Length: 425
Image: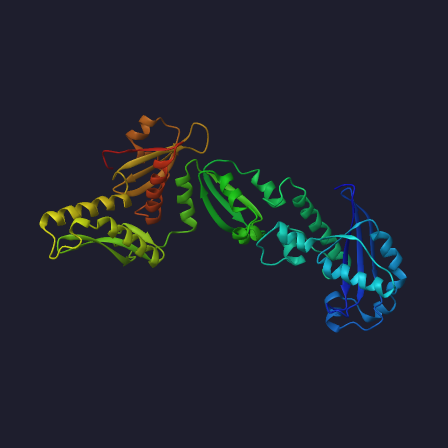
């Protein structure tokens, strides 16, 4: 890498068509991670330039009239390019135009090239745009003197440096962008909540996690499905909560859970049945959904569990014993949507050594959470006295806690546990 000499080039032209001509060129010679030479010049195209080009670049016909012709600077350009790697953003255009100009002089230009546009498309899949502005924004590169050869060449050099770092990794594809790698090193492998922020410091995404470092790395891997976050995430703040469930509660403060449908149990002539209903705040439900299709899938699954093959094809209604057995099945299936106990406490790790986190459930609702260094005996004796945040029948908190307990039940390595509280407050 260090032995090679690279010449970063940017060309301003009279347009983008086949008959376009060079009006300005900048060449920056880069080797051993240092800039050794900077060359820039206007070039007289021997014809007037379009008004929109003049407006875009601030290059006037008057200034070009006094500029050298291409053949007058051809040797100075070739001297810098010979033996080097030609670098530009859209090499097909820039190098193609130079080859055309040398061809008009009866000369052939052969040079190895590195196109930052194509390399970026290969190394960073899934971006919406790969123009110089978009990629410089992506890597937090400031462009000074945009649409002037030297300004764009300097920006291309900084982009080239970023892409070189990606190219010379031991893996063939980028895992993380350079500025994200620095951020990820500061995130601990602990439970908490992540705050992804854009360049202005605005929070654009919240994530709760058992392991914040692992979650952040998964979300910032350079792949198409992470595109939006990759482009916008400039920094990440984190908050250790000890308990991933408390992190989920904090996330709900910023992003409340708002279902549209729910499954309820209704009595139909003494027989209990599951029904999908629109969500109503004061109407208790068992399962909640944002999409109607998801609610119907769950209902179909529940009804399949209730189906009694023994009497599937028998005419007439069910007997009293069959209805009782059916209702018992409904009650059993309904339990999976409730807490394992009406009153329970979840104890887990705290935010620091010696601290514990606690979450209290009363009457099938999350009552609140808190932190303490008290002993377990003291906590179990009066759990409510250690709560620092309380809820009042918070649906999102209840659903998160139910889901969390199911996950906790299946974990091999548990840092948290729960037990029933026999006496409600």
